[in-house]
Image 1 (cartoon, protein in one colour):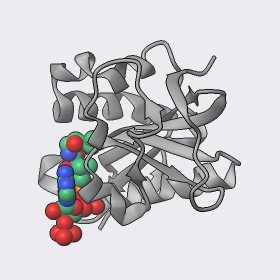
Image 2 (cartoon, protein in one colour):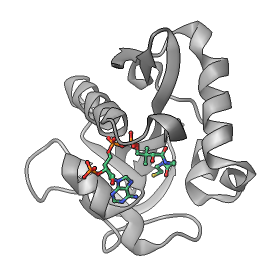
Image 3 (cartoon, rainbow, N blue to C red):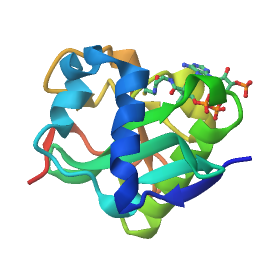
Image 4 (spheres, helix red, strand yellow):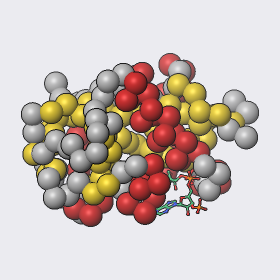
Length: 160
Ligand SMILES: CC(C)(COP(=O)(O)OP(=O)(O)OC[C@H]1O[C@@H](n2cnc3c(N)ncnc32)[C@H](O)[C@@H]1OP(=O)(O)O)[C@@H](O)C(=O)NCCC(=O)NCCS
């Protein structure tokens, strides 16, 4: 059985190899990836799923602005093919979001399938949030920690 733990310094090579394996070279072309380029991951919000000493999954978050409001971009989220369906993906998202809320972050944005992420509180954001590149509007999702229906609006950019 896996456990969710904060990513340690020595894990980053494993996490990067996992992400490269899961997403392949196509990841460089993604709008979400471009928002992470030259942007730092929030180290307090980087988590791994570990099983018997091996990293089987990971999640990271980057700081972004949505219009005038600070928020987080979730991703990459990756779980090894042979370890999928065991709950690691949703547990990583849940743990990361819990910690984000605890640290005072108000919103988490991501690009992904609603059918997966609605299980952990995400809803469509395509009507009020705009990405700085091509993205399927139906896959632009947001979760808030500040009360129902309170969401930022506007264009997403890297927070500096
Ligand atoms: C998406 C991913 C992280 C899920 O990880 P996981 O550990 O298998 O997820 P969990 O075990 O927590 O959840 C599995 C459940 O979600 C469902 N699910 C998985 N991907 C889904 C999707 N894209 N849409 C809808 N449901 C999905 C599974 O069918 C399963 O359902 P069940 O509980 O009814 O059996 C993993 O498949 C992965 O790494 N995919 C490639 C990278 C990727 O797409 N990352 C997300 C980009 S936004």
